Every structure is written in C-alpha cells, then in structure tokens.
Length: 165
Image (cartoon, rainbow, N blue to C red; front, side, top):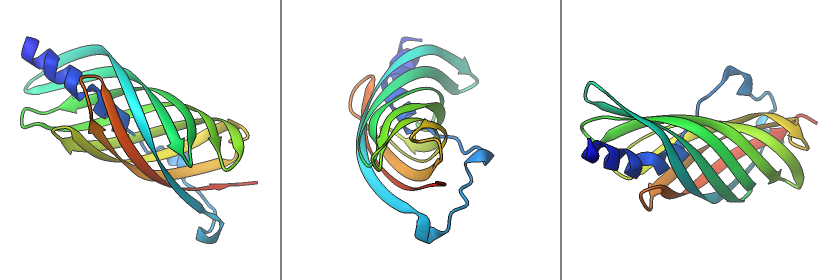
C-alpha cells in the first residue's frame, strides 16, 4: 500500500491537466470573432482519497493553479485521476478560475480532460458559465502538464476564446 500511496501522491499534480467538455461550452462565434492566447501555470495539489480497483489506482484530489499569460488569476479545482498498472493514466477535473482575460475580470468554470504516461500529460480544456466581466466568455484549448514534485506541476496552455457581447 505504501508504494501505491507514493505513486498516487506523485501523480497528483497531473490532475492539473484535467478537463471535461460539457455540451454547454459549444461556442457559436465565427472564427474571425475569436482571439487566441497562451500562457503557463503552476499547480499544487492535496490528495483527498486513494482507492485500488482491480489493477487501477483512483486518486481524488484538490488543486490550486496559478495562471499567467492570456489567463491571469487562480483556479481551484477538484479532480479524479485513474492510474493504470502500465503507468498510463486519464484524469478529469473542474474548477473555478478567478481572474482576468482581455481586460475583463470575473469568474469562469474551467473543466478538462487529459491523459499521459509517467510525469507528462496532454489535455483539452473548456471554459463556460462565467460571471462578472467573464459572463459572456466562451473558451477552449489545449495544455501540457509536467510533474515537478510529489504534489506540484508546471504547465503551458494555448486557448481560443470569444465574448458574446
């Protein structure tokens, strides 16, 4: 069990790479109305639970991401990662981003999904249900996360976005 827990803690920051694609995130703006951007993030996580199911380890954790670049702010999320015996994994999470984009400030739900092996994950993200200045924001993109410690990770993202108004 100690080996499993150590692996689960080591994989925790990969939860930063998570994101799920809700149907409500489908943007309707033409490609000429869209803007694009990129940036980076650092993530710190805390394990809530670790379960063994067959040969898989299922980790549930919270995470805090500090984002810079086109998205500037903090994202707090909860996610689940399934680690397979062969070292591959899939992860999903959802959380609230509080910050700014394109000079507008507010909150935005950002969800995602990723997969990877070892300490590297690639994924997709979507932003929806904004408030304040981000109320009419639609966002989607990709990201890469690299494990840097037992509960930390660094990553980069690339997004496309538009505002309805």
